[in-house]
Length: 285
Ligand SMILES: NC(=O)C1=CN([C@@H]2O[C@H](COP(=O)(O)OP(=O)(O)OC[C@H]3O[C@@H](n4cnc5c(N)ncnc54)[C@H](OP(=O)(O)O)[C@@H]3O)[C@@H](O)[C@H]2O)C=CC1
Ligand SMILES: Nc1nc(=O)c2c([nH]1)NC[C@@H]1CN(c3ccc(C(=O)N[C@@H](CCC(=O)O)C(=O)O)cc3)C=[N+]21
Image (cartoon, rainbow, N blue to C red; front, top):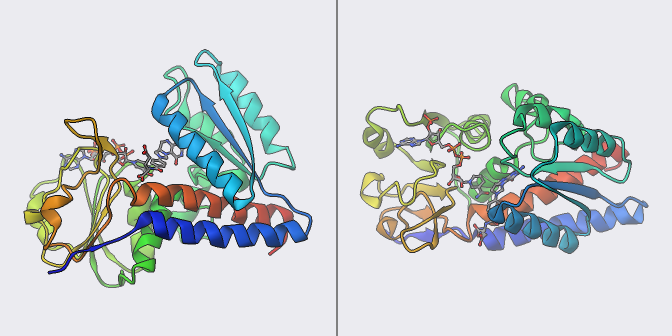
């Protein structure tokens, strides 16, 4: 079997180009999309993501408003800032980079964001909308996984989809989206028994475990499509996924690399969500 690479960087670029066109069309109507990104504390990984998001905004034509707050910021101050941004007409999207410092209640902070501006799709309103099939804002990484599959001509309907991981930000929403696309969905987690047996049945595998090279090629069914959400460091400090990429060669039919797979799609879908949120709030198409 000849294993094909799913080029997330390239597909993300296509999506950013589509959003750039949409932003130009909005500009002709006198509308400039705006995204506020809030970073609390100085997590170095978070800083990289935040700077990637700013670059993407510049490329697409979204005005970005950046707030870098010290670790000691109180929860009340952060809630106050979110409140102000909720009412700011120039801001159509609000993203609070996670994780937050330990003294803050993440759920409380997320719930303070207006669901209309919740471009991360983390607010319970948007999570609920997804679970009952309403058209809310969908979380960026899960939405990116679906776009990768669709744009690589992978059929989801009727296929056995195995998701490894059940977190609120990846595993669970990916499962709901695959179900919405008529996949037959199995969600695995740390208490799952016989993971190997389940994996052998999978036509589509989505790995969101957070363990470097957790899944090996010999565990897959011949021809499986593999989407690797993981972002880990290997023993040499090199960025790697949850899937042992090399051992999947010749077994998987298609696979995403890390880096260059799901990561760039997360940013592209954030741009997509910002444009959508802007259109909704401005009442334009
Ligand atoms: N590319 C991107 O844009 C993004 C990448 N990521 C990356 O994706 C990965 C997952 O992230 P996230 O969902 O936040 O991680 P979490 O740590 O929140 O969740 C990990 C999930 O994996 C499950 N798990 C852990 N060990 C095993 C095991 N031995 N067998 C089966 N399941 C197991 C856990 O099960 P249980 O629930 O039982 O504990 C849990 O549901 C990370 O590497 C993260 O860095 C995350 C977000 C965005
Ligand atoms: N509120 C919030 N929303 C998020 O969407 C969010 C978050 N918090 N906290 C952290 C995670 C992680 N995340 C990534 C974004 C881009 C890449 C990305 O661009 N990755 C590149 C490589 C980047 C590098 O070289 O380090 C790639 O995979 O090719 C990865 C991971 C968004 N997250």
